[in-house]
Every structure is written in structure tokens, then in C-alpha cells.
Length: 597
Image (tube, rainbow, N blue to C red; front, side, top):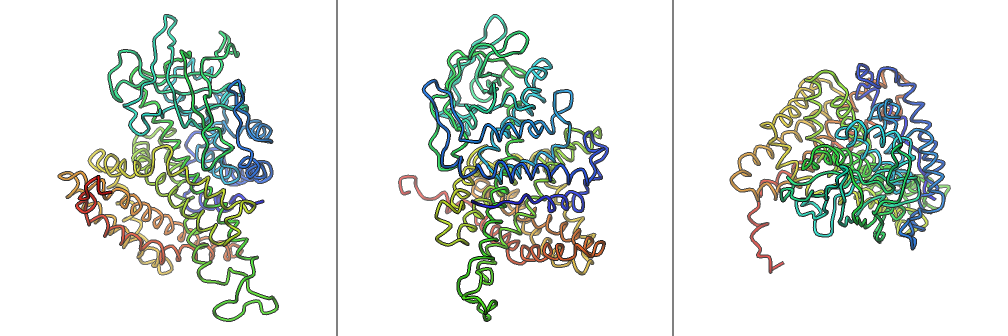
């Protein structure tokens, strides 16, 4: 069975030393949360995922979910008990306001805990992750009665949540959806239609499932302007909020998938099901995007999570597997062969994964802190800056972390050689599970278009200019720090490539939109490499200070600095070839006639 150790110490270092977690003490939920308390909370979460949910990961993958004749779905053995442990521990509603049954702790903490949960068992973690996203949408757009009825039960894990967007004829283009909502005299709506690819759509882990469904009210405008959002519970509710009759919503089938077998991805059928409008009519996408944006950060973390567990197993295997001798002479002459960790190519793969993981975790936590500021700060200037940065970086995080997370799962499998291809080692499951994250919650090509077409020019480019300014200020302030110079110089070069690419887009995309489309994917990854390089420069600065402050941590800090230098030397220069591809334009890409493909 694969091993996993939640990276609690690395997470605490990032929050405390790099991201100044204590500096957020004025925000609600942060004030009483000391670093020691943070470590204790994360340690307890780590035990749950390492000891309870990790052992179920392969079991769930092999057993999958089963749809019964009555359209109900059973999850794999052990999942119900594990989910109950998750719910009873208060982990699902950790960041929900206390007035709605949660603990009011920072969303940043939930993001970290979801990383641990997903590394240990991605399929199981998705059930609670969808519930958290549904609660976020209801908190922002539900009326007070809806919040009081639904959120406390969802926060406790007694009820679960889903997101229903996709239909057979529409995925990204939601303007094509056909699910109908017919008004009823009592103020409810009759929802009719079919949704597909619905994660956690039907299961036996919770008493009720609260579906958030996009539908079009009769007579609404065509396209996205006529879409509304509805609560459609699996069970109707009595006047006191208790469970009533079964609603007319059912699982038509479970999708047969490449991975995440233990999560019930369902075709959901709505046949005059009772639904309740959330927010304003014809403004459903505004409400759903709250859930989708939170989900996109959650999916970005899925890419990191699989990368992390894949790395841990590959590193252990490389230290133990004896094969061949070191190119520079035997390192373990008393043994029949050296462990494969002595070979440069094995180290290349491991360091590529590790140096990504540490910086990607820092980026995800930085984005989570921005979300906390945007939703909790009383300072409008701070809220605006946080919202700008979060909006700009969300498509980058979703696209880059899931792309690279999948690549890293493949690399980790390669470290195992033939054993990586065999199911019992668990590596091929990581590859299969990681692949979906590049597709759902907006395929990564869509994330790239969102970045180039919407986020860059938004508000006259305010967010991008502020972010470039932030990085430039760091470079200027730390350029004379001798031990930090390799990081600063590498970052400065990469930022220059990004600025050149941005200028090229400004000059060439408006007159010829295909230039933007052709450049978008490379631009997203160029942007992401710079973001990782900036995070590594900040990590290196904190590691240098930490080693001086605490000699006992010097070895751990040196390991971080080596991983960071590897990133700067071997991975950050990717920005140059991304720039070259961007400025080549769209002419060749768009010149081949469709029938010639």
C-alpha cells in the first residue's frame, strides 16, 4: 500500500515564516489561532487522513461505487465510517461562520486540510469538497432562511452538497443548457432536465444531498443571461426542516471513468423535481461562479495533492531499490548494487516534483489568504487588492497546478520502472486520478483563455500591473542580498519574459484575436513559472533567516535552498521557450484547413 505523511512542518513553515500568518490576526477567525494551535490542528487532521482514509484509497479504486435498482448508490467498504469520522471531527464546516454551525476558522486552514485529505484519498475528499463549495455559494447568495436551514446540516456532514452545471449538449458553453424551471404557486419551481458528470451526485454517506442546479425559468432570455440557480434537495423538507418525501431527482447511471472510481460521478435526472431559487432570477451564473471559483482553487490543490503523495512514494522507492552502480563509482560497495537515488536522472525527476510541490503549496496558501482577506477584512482597499490578485491567479493555479501535478504523477511512476505500471504499488492510480483535474471545473485551455481574455485586461490591467509591481519591488529590495542573488536574478529574467509576452499580447491580440487564443496556454504556464519562481525567492529568503535564527533547523533549511536552486537553474528558464512560442503568433496554427487534420 502507498505511504503518505502529511507535510505539516512544511505547511507551518510556509504560513509562519514565508506568508506572515500572524500578520492576519485582525481578521475574524485568525485572532486566537497561534502557530502552536495551527500545528496541533494540522497534526490531528494528518492522523485522520494517514490512518483512516489513506488505507481506503486502493480499496475504493478497486471496488468503485455501485448503483442499485432503486437508483441509490453505495460507496466502497469503509467509506461511510471514514466520512463520519471526517464529519464528527468538524472538518467539513471548519471555515463556516459559527452562526451557521461552523467553527469560523480561516479558509486557508480548510485549503491545507483539503490538500492532506486529497493526497490520502482523492475520491473520498471530493464528497466533502463539493459540500464546502455549495455552502460557499449559499453563504454569498442564499437568503437567510436558506442559510439557516441548509448550511448547519451541511457543515456538520449530516447533509452533503453538489454542483449541477453540465448537460449532454453543453459543458463550457452554459448558454446552451436546456434544463427548465417552471414556477409553482407556492413559490417553488418544478425542475426538469438532465445533468451529466455530476461528482458526488448520489451516495450513501449523508442523509440528504443538496443539489445546486442551473436551469432556465420559463420565458427567460436565451443564453447565459437567462440562467438561474436552484436548490434541489434529494429529499423534500417538512415545515420544520426535517426530511420529508423523496424528491423527483435520481441517479440515472454512474459514469465509467479512467480514475476517481470511488467518487460517484452521476447522470442526474430531474423530473418536475421541487427546487427553490437562490438569489435573483436570471442571475444564476453569478451565484454559481462563487462555487466554481472556490472549486477551481480546490482542483488546483488536487493537482498538488497527487503530486505530493506520488513524490513521497517515489522518493522512498528510490532510496530502497537497488539497481546498478553510481556513475562516479559504487556508493554502497557492501551491497550488490546502489539504490537508484544515486542516479542523476532519478534525482532529476524527484527534484522536479519536489521543487514544484513546495512552491505550489506556497502559492495555494497565498491565494487562500487572499480569499480570507477578500471575504473577512473590513478594509476596502485590502479587500480590493486581495480580490484582484485572487482573480488573476485562480486560472493560473487551476491550469498550471493540475497540468504539472499530472506530469509529476507520471514522473513518479517512471521512478518505479515496471513496478510503477503494476496496480499494487498504487502509482498508476495516482496517474489515473490526477488526470481529471485538468478537465473538470473548466478545462485548462479555458483557464488559459480566461486569463488572457478576461483577467489580464480587467479594470484596465489593474491586477496584472499590481502583481508585476509587487514582484519588481521584491527584486529591488533583495537584489544585494548575496545568498539570495541566484533566486533574485533568475526571477528578474523570468519576469522580463513575462512582461515581454504581456506587451506582445497587448500589441497583437486586439486586432487579431486568434493571437490571444494561440498564445493563451503558453502564457498561462509562463505566468505560472514566474509565480513559482517568486514563491521560491520568498521561501529562500525565509529559509536563510530561519537557519540563522535556529541552528537546529539548518539542515532542513538547506534542503529547501537546494530544491529552490534546482528550480531556478533547471525549471524557471522554461519562461524563455514559452515566450518564443507566444511571439510566433497564430498564423501557422490557424492556416491548416479543417479537413486536412
